[in-house]
Image 1 (cartoon, one colour):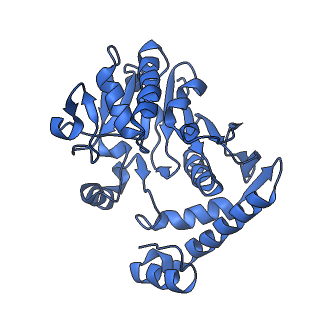
Image 2: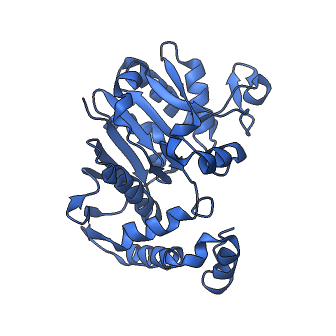
Length: 286
């Protein structure tokens, strides 16, 4: 079976730690996928035990806001099937078994059962909210390298810059509407389970074995993740090409938060309130 190319965008050390935890969740499942991270942190190598967490580290400077935009992922994609994962995800079940299915479509993505929260033009004079179409969540999506997906990514870059909306989901939805040839496969909540949504939270707590990918957003949404984030960081060997003062400050700030995540009290809402008040008064966990 051919492998899937996994992509992360991790700008900022905190997001790099989350991406490492997500990639490690794949490694623990014995994945054969190739894992790439694009980051502005001068990371040379990252290992957990004897295994490398990332197969490829692409270092980029973040000069403008669009440097972080997900449409750049296509430039680093591989022939065949690719999967983009937000940093705040964990893979709970093997994903390789769906390779042949996902390869039949240009993009596979979850459609949320709600209209977009922001008002924006979807097609000519039609507003997305008035159209009442479901929002496409770009935190997790498969795509097949080829002309059809390339068209969507090019439109995505164009509309992201034209629309000037910080979130990339409105411009992605508009690109899908505009594209002429791309075939989309809708994914169920199993592939992008988000505990901040009441329906998803019930699904995760009721059927955790059915969750393929957890998209937790913040450890306060799914506190069990917090301890795994701390274990990933403190249990890994981080090798940098350089460590300037700005990076040291960023790492120190992140470590302070991860020390809090290690505490058993963090698992409980009352405990998070107490830790927030006594340890990290500038960071609300609730």
